Image (cartoon, rainbow, N blue to C red; front, side, top):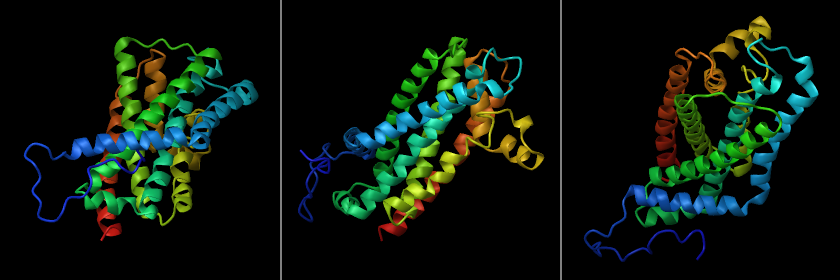
Length: 275
């Protein structure tokens, strides 16, 4: 069965749906998420890039630049400092592919086929976001495994692991919904890929690779108050068993705000693009 045959065939106009058999939005979203996962699994080039690039960046920063970058005395080595930032960077790269996938669906006409069988816009986009979350969690596990091999040693409590996972998943979902909205806005998959560059760039002017205090004054304010920095600080503190204060709640507030904006924008954009 092809990946596009994910819902029941269209019924004749006026034909009633048998009681109790009409799938709901959650069923539609689950089926479409499985479709997106299958498509991702076959796109080996994108999978390799989403895994290889964060790992290569982590190795470059640890082994090429790590000896020249000064961090706080709280960290035994640079690898202990940089890994949480690379994890967020990995999430950004993985979420960005959602924009291309949504744009390809819009360009290929499959959206019209879904809508002809009563599949709404929210389940379609939710399927892409769910698949992005699964892909990102798998990629994060691989990056984390490599980090353990090169010397990263977490010291989190069980509560710390749970809260760190919550922050990470919240950001993956928020970034994936933003990426889905960008995919609706872009007129081609190539344009969608270009639009997501800014989202992938955000970890760099943050505390991911160097301390914010070491940045020029004109960049310091942006780096300290942009949405990625509290997420990285939360992951770093929680994974290393350090005091984090209210930083995780600030990070979750940022993720919730981004998600709310992305949901509203994607709903409007879907209606505009499918009129």
